Image 1 (cartoon, rainbow, N blue to C red):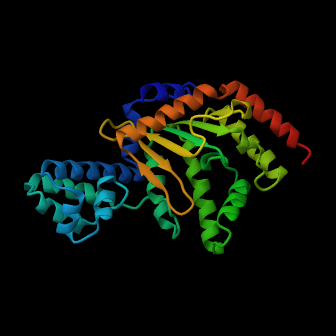
Image 2: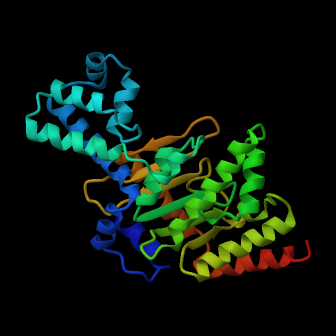
Image 3: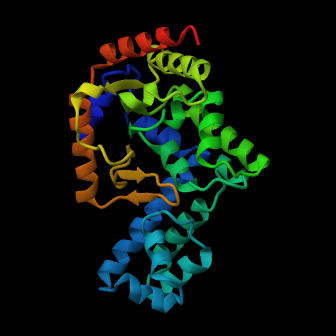
Length: 308
């Protein structure tokens, strides 16, 4: 974790320490941390009792998937479920109170819950809590760097049948997420972009001209480090998948890899799998153009679009 975090941090000058994590813990987004902490403790308790996910699901009269999502922090817990789990694991009053307090905190409302259609709600909370974000994209500019017009064109292309209200909400949520990079305590953000992303004219030439300008501006403001993976590299470490690696200050919270799909997304937190993605990210970073050369490439492509 350390070597990748260091590499991401090379493009940023703001201090990064435990005080930042404590500051974030006071924010509304900290519900996601509490949700993950609760899930971690529930999983440890299941292990201690020698039970499988299926065993616990049978006791709760629910699906094994529900139990698994509770333990990985990908499902908001109900107070009844946590109460029943406390009874199942024969916890004392003090420990039960701690877990119920975590459950109540995890059920607080983040800003994104006001929107009717936010299909990746867990991701927004994790993104808001992350100390370091490494994003690899081979198809489109990542959401944190998109202009409004680019976002509109992309969402319309990916989901053409959306109701107008839902469409507007998705655009608004995407732009609101970008406030994360404007904070003094923003995460270290590394965007590894396949060069194809820059040549795919989402929304047309004028939209792409503005979009490339926004990426350059984010670099100039020290909000992001962007590295381009050039065409002439050929095959590379993650050619079959976009992914986002999220890392946290809290020692008890393991990193998470988010892999977005057309009909569903995956959250990966198994240590061996996360290590594989981290290794791929490191290889991509080392193979990509350095930040300065990447900025030059962006500027060249933007100049070529200036007549659009």
